[in-house]
Length: 358
Ligand SMILES: [Zn+2]
Image (cartoon, rainbow, N blue to C red; front, side, top):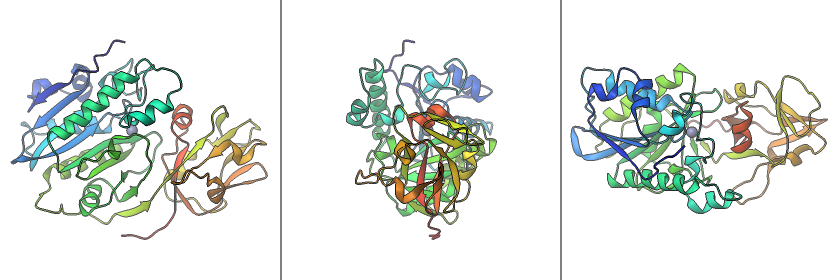
């Protein structure tokens, strides 16, 4: 597929014909990365809503379309809003919302740090330059309007409750989080994601829940509506209490190890996770909880690096007989039984299950 990565399509206060009757038709009418500007009451201030950095995560687009079309006329937000719809080609490739990125492409939300993505690509990926160019265009589209706040809407690959992620906690970050959900993860993971860039304003990634879950679309819609309508004199008002979880670690399976999912121990090589691993995205995991099974290489199959790059896997997990079990009280996020995502990204994120409500 030939893609013009240098192209950005702009829509300003689009009319109902441009927005089409439903989000599917609207998405199919877009050609590549699209920026939509909506006038607000205060035309000197901007907020940015980013979505579809991942083409298989529809909640943001569905909610934005609903927000733009729910009344007879466009909504009138408190400030101008710039919407950035990034991976239109991946989202419309073959079937709608099936591809995180194009078959020969790379993960766009790992391309905001050129060095790290180049070093992680063994061999030349012929689309990498294009993806890096698109990441730059997204960054430019954000900086152009010098926004007061940015939200980036995603879906988790497995099912689970909504949560927010940020690299810096401020009162406004807590407020923005509270419009969408009640859990905020403070992350210092550097993977080249958009939210790691410094835009001198709050940047909050919202993981709305699973992409096929209507509740996730609803979370995105309600959150966008509140985000667009909140007053911006100094601090934004907070909707509800938000629990903060500190510094998640990524549990990854090492290269060349086999990954399976099953109800029972099948004696497979490598790592076998429980087929229902997604259910542990809800609530916590107790010390001793069975998560799966390991071959003779045990915990060696897995890796969990802390912020100093030290493998701390055995602080969190242990092998009992050949069972993989929790060695502490944990909270896990984004566990999924989709093998490709679990392999290429991580099995799931882990935080110590501290239950201090702030
Ligand atoms: Zn995503």
